[in-house]
View 1: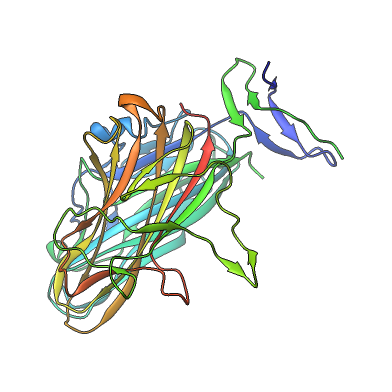
View 2 (view 1 turned 45 degrees about the vertical axis):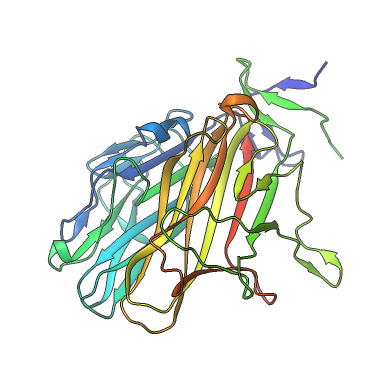
Length: 184
Length: 191
C-alpha cells in the first residue's frame, strides 16, 4: 500500500512556521493581439484558450482575476511570476520599456517594481523577447490592503512604431504565475 | 530530526497535491557544426543536437542530473519519465551577423505521441545591422503531462524560426560555458 497522508498544512518542526499548504495555484496569461497604445496599462489579456489550452489547462486552482489589465490574486500566498515581453520596434529609440507596477492598497497607488527594456539603433524592424522574473508576497486579497499588479508600457512614441506583440494562438507576450508557499 | 516517509500528500478531500517523485533535468545544445552551434537551414527545422548537462568542477558534479529518472531526448524530441505538472525553462543564446528583422525559435508541444504539434510559444530576436551581435532570450512554460506512453503521450521540441543558415546561429556548449539550454522541473502531480 502506498504511503499517503492527508493534511491541511505543514509547519516547521521548530517555531511552527507554515511552509506548505494544500493550495495549488498555477496560471498563464497572454495578450491576445498586438498592443499598440502609446503608453498606459497593457490590456487585452487572455488565458491560452485554443489547442494549447490542452497543454496547460489553466488555471490550476482558482486563478488570477484580470480586469482592464489589472491582476489580483485568488488567495494570499508567496507567488512567483515569470513574464516575457515581446517588443517590436521600427523606431530609432534608446529605450522602449515595460514596467510591472504593484499596489498594496487595492489599486489606489502603484509602485514600479520590475522593468524590461529594449533599444533600437535604427528604424529597421527590431524584435526581442525580454524576460521578467519576480516574486510577490500577497498578504491581502480583499479590503483596502489588497495586492494587485499590472504591466505598463512607457513608450510615448507613435504606437505603430513601438508595439508589444500578442497573439491569440501563440504565447508571445505572456506570463506564468505559480504560488510557491503561504504568505510570509 | 522529524522526518515523514511518504509517497504523496493529499488535501483533506483526497486530491493529490504533492508527491515525492522528484524530476529535475537540464539539457544543453551541442550544435550541429564544429563550433557546437546550431545553424538552421530554414524555418521550422527541429533543433536536434542536445545532451544532458554534466557540469562538474574538479571531477565533482555540480548538477548531478538527472534528479529522478530524467527526460529522454531523441532527435530533438523530449519525452517525460512520469506524469506530472512540469515547468520548462528555455534559455536561447544566439549569434547573428545579418540585418534580420526576426528570427528565433518555436516551442511546440504534442499530445498525441508526436503525430501533431501545437506551437505554444515563440522566442524572438532581431538585428538591425550586419555587425556581429550576441543575445539571449528566455521562456518559461507549464506543461501538464497526463500521459507518457501510447497514442496520447506528451512530447515537446524546439524548432528554428526564420533563421538564415549562414548568419544566424544558436550558441551551444562552447567548452568554456554553457549556451542554449532547456531546464525541466516537475512541480507536482498531473492535473
